[in-house]
Image (cartoon, rainbow, N blue to C red; front, side):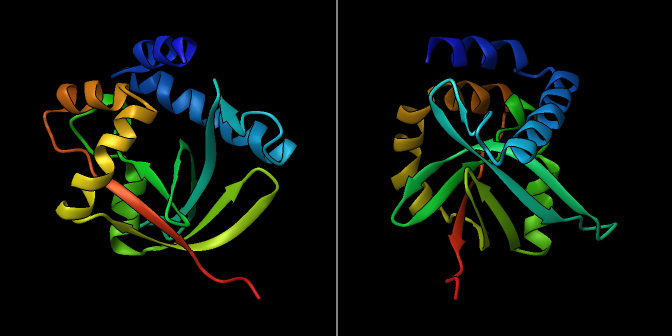
Length: 154
């Protein structure tokens, strides 16, 4: 966990590094089906693929996640940036996403948690990754929590 905190501190508000690391993370995750970087310093990570709100192109981001009630929680922190990450804007326009977890790809519906649910899960997320609190302070905004609800696979 200390390593992840140090990485978080290094990347916090360094958007060039965030984008560079995301690009490398996505490629290594895909090539190895999550065997490499399916876990980041002990925290599980996934690939989230959204449809670009302006271009319609598929966009993929690597994110850490927390399982909660058979769903996955992700946090739109963008390393403390005052602006939200593009993937959040994409899901606000189209909540149909693909989630790639090590060894498994699934379709899901993504939606921003309302205030009541956020109040319940935010303490769990801070326990899971305390730097989310720092990112929220740095950003000057309430960081949205997104719920990924997997669709039943037949």
